[in-house]
Amino acid sequence: MNSAEWHARIESAGQVAGAGFLVTPRKVLTCAHVVRQGGAANALTVTFTERPGSPAVPARVIADGGWGGGATDLGDLAVLELAHEVPIAPAALAPVDAAHGQRPDRPRKLVVYGFPVGFDEGTLAEYRITATQLLNREWIQLEAWQPGGQPLAPGFSGAAVTLQDTGEVVGMVTAAAGAPGVHNGRMMPTEVMARYWPDLEGLVPTSDHPTADRARLRELVEKAVRAGLDGDPVRRVRLYEAARGPLDPDAPPEGFDSLWSAALFVLCEVDGADAAATVGRFTAQVEALPALSQAVPAAAPDWSPILVDLQHSGAGDGHVRVEVSAYSGGRRHPVGSETVPQSRMRAYVQDRIQAAFRYLTPGCDELLAFALPRDWIDLEVDRWANAPDDDTPLGAVYPLVVTDQARLRPGTRHQLTRAWQRLDALTGVRVHRVECGSPEEPARLRLRLRKPDACLAGFATAPAEPRTRPHFDTSLTAPAPVVVWSRGGCVVGPEEPCAGGDGCSGKTFLDELDACVAAVPPAELPRQVLALREEAAAEDGHWAHDIQLLWDDPRVFADPHAAPHAGPSAHSHSPVA
Image (cartoon, rainbow, N blue to C red; front, top):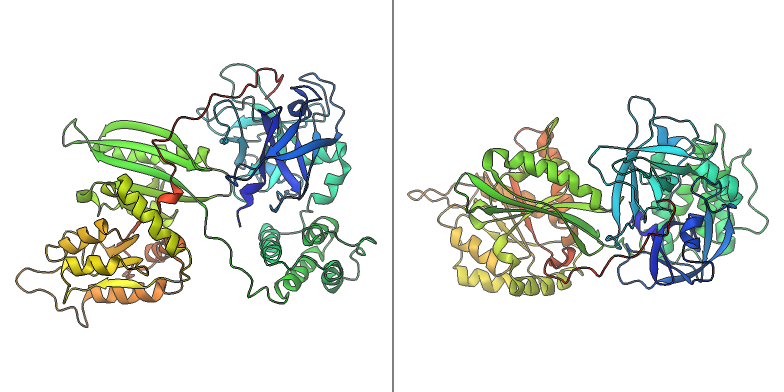
């Protein structure tokens, strides 16, 4: 599921005014100053930017916190009602005090997704709480996670403050510090928001329910809603009655208006020592719904890639041109571009990858993609350390793929896009094997890879091996959407070429690969290879130890040659962030 879809952009009279977040299928929370800054008579609309192409939804203010209009006035909260329900899973709220962490010396990372000037598609800021004190019984101070991070600015107002590890909401941004160069701000925690809008109390779960249990229940409810199993009001009450314990509250007399409402009732109204058991029973009831196991499978991951483009530099053999970009919501965000000595290349890439995460929507499916020259296509980028103080291989932390820079040509991108449109219907992958023993003529391989069912070309040898190098080049130019090989594959000697039978390490690699991907949709291959790399990092001699995945779906990348975004929207009248 893509929990980030509940992030909202608020517009007033056609201008971006700030951020908000969906808490029920029809209600959005934001700051009062966001909806007032353009005048009370202006039309309000809400856009869910993580659903590209979805139209703006008209909205009206139905409740507020009594904000007086000043930057330090209390009650800066507004509740918007949408003109109609939206088919988006609402934000998950965290239990009270979840933002503080278990130890004061180890604060939890908090992520904010807002719409400052020049970022109408959204951008991120990372913060933490270092003190639990409520300022004026209203706010908690936010402090920048790191000094060089994105500061809170006009356009972040109303944005949900979320836990980086779970995506759950702990509060709402109401103000920046105001002084240039100061990266602090304020948030209104959920317990204060509930003071101004009591309906929110029923949406905040108790701390009795473990995070994994809450996430599993939300996943199953979303699956049931997608499958159309949410329409029977009697069934919703029966699900709860079958799960409730002897001390749990009765179902509301009016019942539940949706399966989401029933799930939130279980999470928020059931507490005490047996609360976790009730959640477990209710989760089992939802999972046992008729036809849920045959329900429409979840959509392929909506990848948000970080692209690392490594190029030969004109500054000499010892230098590399590095360009790093982040893609989110169909937009490209340049992160860094520099010519560096090869000795600094890994450290520079590490630093820019971490910086690129600030541009990704919390909860999205991240993907690291390296665009490499053909003669560097075997580069062990998946073995590079994750960070200076963390030697875990990048490929065992994130889904990581490579592609050939020559495939970035517009004509090749067009062919690949058409191929991926066919592959969307596949529920598994068949490996088109290029064996050691009898590689067919490159021209015949091209014909095979151009067929409608062609997806993955698997090689028993590494790309540099002379006997199969023409076949490898053919697979790239055909173009095959996916190419997989082992950097330590069977070494084909010029005098005693391998026959490709039993005992051939390349044959063993292809046999294992065939078994691992037979039931994996093409769009999920990066995640499958991540799992294999994690296994290989923990097990000596694992067959996937040197696996290299060339995976190339142009649809997950915005066009870097597209026209620049239109001029920024005005936020100059906002008294706070």
